[in-house]
Length: 336
Image 1: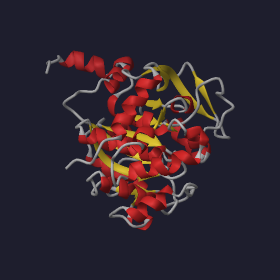
Image 2 (image 1 turned 45 degrees about the vertical axis):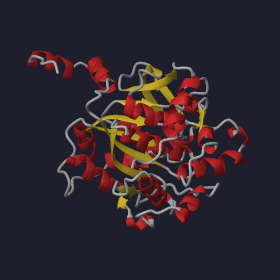
Image 3 (image 1 turned 120 degrees about the horizontal axis):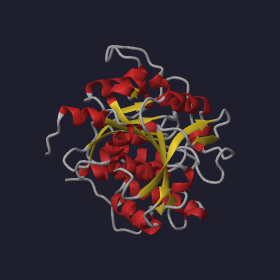
Image 4 (image 1 turned 135 degrees about the vertical axis):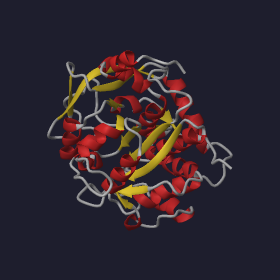
């Protein structure tokens, strides 16, 4: 490893452009520390996202610090536990929002299917950690500027964490704790194509007040994988045609793909793209546009081109290659 003078280190630390370069330059010998925050139920791309996160963890690319639900529906924590247990990581902490928040059941009933058919340590949401307490406990124990949070659901937990008070885990306020411990937030949220300003993307819209609070006050860089990215990338069909046996991931996609004619080539991959970028960085796969998100009261969003904190993804790698990358990760089997 190269040695740098203290002057050069100070220059890098206080230079925003170089700080962004650091965020996206993954060192092969230092796995990313990931907290996964999901609504785990209204759609099933969450299952694909957590599957590829476990695949990359087994490959040594990341450490999964916690899996947390922003959806109060009663099966979200058990479903997270099923997937963690299947991938031989039953001890990964599971959290769920315990205060006011959105509760959306799974219309396709895949959550009850896997909870019924697969082992899991956490049987009810009541057995899971309070989301904010788990965030504060995990973040307080990590090195400074070492954690990437990836959100693929509502922003309720992010807003609650920002507004949290000092506690037994840290004397810092929520915003101070985030600023000290988190280096990057990757969020599947918003829309950044020609419909910007009018389209109400689901994750922003369902708890618009929390979305507005979160993105008005968030103190670290943010990368957005917008609706228009995942909409074009269809995955999950190969695992349904594979000879893999007794897999909750395969079972979910095999059940759900036939239920929607729009999924005949695979499910749209909103959540998977966010997880891929959270672990591997964006540069190999996507371009970016700099600025800052503006969340409107109705859950739609605009973009301030003069902002400096945020980036949203644009397509760069051919869609077929992105699909192949995600599908291969999704086919990963639990480590022995």
